[in-house]
Amino acid sequence: MKQSVKMIVGNWKMNGESAGLAEFEALAARLKSDPCRVDVAICPPATLIDRMRRIGGPAAIALGGQDCHAEPRGAYTGSISAELLVEAGCDLVIVGHSERRQMFEETDAAVSAKTAGALRAGLTPIICVGETLAQREAGEAASVVRGQILGSLHDDLTGRDWALAYEPVWAIGTGLTPTLEQIAEIHAAARAAMVERLGEGGRIAPILYGGSVNAGNARDILAVAEVGGALVGGASLKATDFLAIIHAAELALVAADAQG
Ligand code: 13P
Image (cartoon, rainbow, N blue to C red; front, side):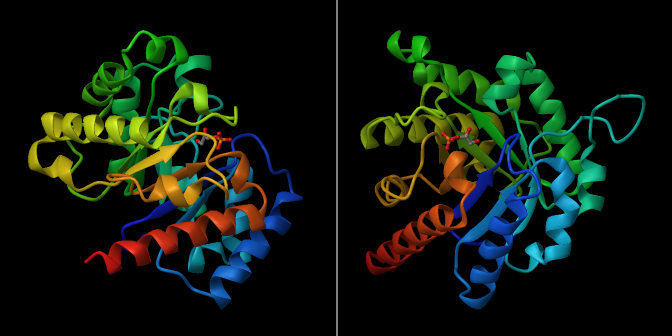
């Protein structure tokens, strides 16, 4: 991916079917005719990756997996390795999404192993962390995120070959978001934990915010300190909604330039 400040990644989850390709086609066409400085990626269901690649996605939009197995190959029915994602046309992969942590009981150690698998294959891992509502209400948000970061990162991570995504579980798909102050607080705590775990190399990777990002709130969220982009679920499924978020990221870049 290009080296830039803001990264906008769409996570289609188990949505899209073939009809979603029309949305992707519209998005790709728009970004080709009107290039932007923002790094844009879509992580579709695995069955759509190759079809998106053929539509010409990679020229304007990087493609990513939503998960990978830690091993390169073998008898792991139903799983996809990072190597297979690369062959299909991916540049990146989401690991440790809260839906996988909760529904598939993925541990920090499993996420760390998947991170190593992604790096081995040459994919950019986006490592997800985030607290539940009960943890936030107990005042544990920052400590939970720190613990997930210490456990889920991997020694093989260096500089900018990866991203963290802070996604509060209670903000995903609910229309709820933390306040801008709360986002700033957790992103600062996440950065400190990244440096604690990796040393100076932990200062560089972007920290994305995810959880009910939409065209209306993206600009404010993307202007928060240490918010290096967004991981977008529902609002990434429609080209017009996703383009509005990409536009907000461009405006945030312009505003940052103006501040020097
Ligand atoms: P929503 O944007 O639909 O809340 O989903 C966020 C998410 O889980 C992205 O990975």
